[in-house]
Length: 455
Image (cartoon, rainbow, N blue to C red; front, side):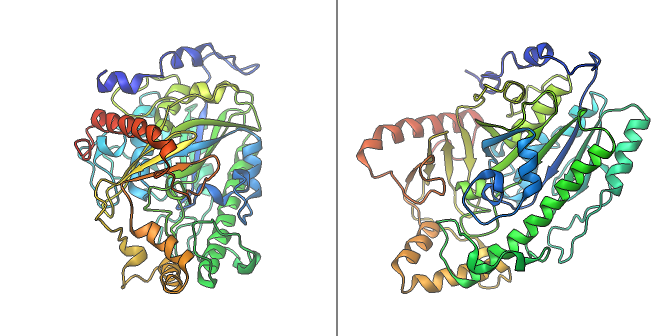
């Protein structure tokens, strides 16, 4: 099977399905949906009430959106950092195809992206807020959202979004609008953290408990709450403009929270994201799907729903069948995850198990933003608290060592251990599973011509 055949595998018939899917009552046969995509910044899947992660959170509007559409429980970015996630989202390409494994990588070429693909289908494609994406084809710039993710006092307004939508409507043109928030990227200065008392925060089990760590998660939760307000305002804007039924509304949480084992890591707290999609009358409300999906699948899905031709030289595949069939839970057999320059790792993530492969076990993880002595980031303070506790607390030391030192293989039962705290790789009953998953992982890396394919 060559690369193109591989990328198309599992996607046959999707376009035909969309064309044959029942249409909304009263809709014309050539009616194409609009798209609004709200994207967060550095927010792990577990930061939302609808994720049912057991953590302390308050996101009533995003939770409401989940009740009105379908939510993916196995949605991933290939590499947990801003630039690779956004390059994957807008181009449909995985890091081996584009060369964008982390923020320091430039894409190998000027790849076509969502502006080209939807533009060819007659769409106006706009973006408000954070870009963090190197592209030849430019989005229509929409004002209203702070674009600097490190800003201490970011602001947002939907006035520019309303103008963009109104202009598209006046020209009888379908539109695609990305609203790219900088919430909840550090420095976590937005929102009221007193609404999230530190002593009541429920920490993920992989974290070392301490007052600084609790304060960090409280500050982060407060900014996520303001993100929730942005989603609420977007939903109201579509309602006020009577565009709800004509618009596919997607919420994406980007990659994981900027804390140890989150952003920059290959664990689910870094690579797993929330994706919820609403399209009244088309997508069954209040549903979840365990179909495995990735950011690279968004572009072909938009093109497919718009009635365009899905590009054949990308890594993504359309999720149309999953979205439009309530009983469908199949898309990919697995997600492929890629570590960054701080630690060369690869992972194969299935619905039930995840295999992490670290070819060079002598390599020590050293992410300078978290661990660097000159770092002034808030999450660096949390890491220092972890390291200090590890000097006298064996449990804390095990959690610190888990980040800095890695065996060649880590295997996790995701369904019983979603925060990946118990490595099963040394259990003999899983030896064949590891062998099979490693074989599949290496096969996929070879198809994609990944830099670790020959290891």
